Structure formats: structure tokens, C-alpha cells
Image (cartoon, rainbow, N blue to C red):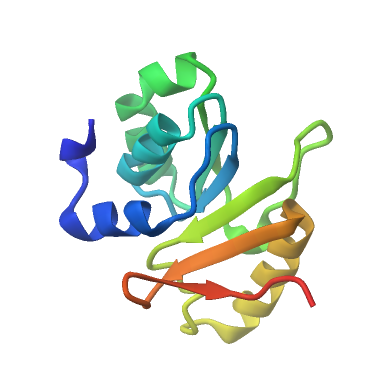
Length: 143
């Protein structure tokens, strides 16, 4: 249900180049409203929503039971600068971050680490989108 999305988050989700079957990493998912909407739009794909806050992950888990049970959404409590793919985890097609200090310039040193982590987690064609554009801007990860 898109009705739990703010107009701003809806504009961000609408701007993402989503396709069925994609793997999407949402960084700083908060209570998970955008992650649920992305999961709804990518059919057989998968969203991994991460947040450094245990409270946010707990809220997202409580609100996303159906998507998690269906295997379309998973959650992980971790900061992007600590993120690594798990042993059997496939790379992600796109990553999206809204109000993430490590990626929006507020924490430049963490940002350098975060971009390295994302470079390792995204496919060779993987793309990173953050807020601050109209409504999104893309940050180059590869080369």
C-alpha cells in the first residue's frame, strides 16, 4: 500500500529505474515504507533494507511481515560503512539512500568508506541514487 508513503518518498520511489526481478539495497530504511513500496514494484525481485538503528529495523520488521514472509524483503541492522555482502548473497542492481549522512556529504570520511562498500555490493552496472536531486541524484560508483 503506497498510502503509508509521504509525497516526498513516493516521488523518490517513482524516480527509481525499477524493473521486475531487480535486487535493490535501501540504505537508511527507517520504518521501511519505501522498501515495502519498492518490493511491491519489482515483482520477483528482492529488497534488502538496512539501517544502523535497531529501533528502525524493529519498526520495519513489524510493518513488513507480509513482504518478509513472501521473501521479497529482508532487513539488516548495519551502517553502510560496515556493510558487506554475505557469503551467498547476490550483488544489487541499485542502491538508494535518503537522508544518509555518510552519502550526502555530512560525513565525508564515512562517505569514502561507504562508497567502497557499495562498489563491492553492486553489480558492475549497479547504480546509486540519493536524495538531494529532483527528487534524486545519481552518484557514480564505478570508474
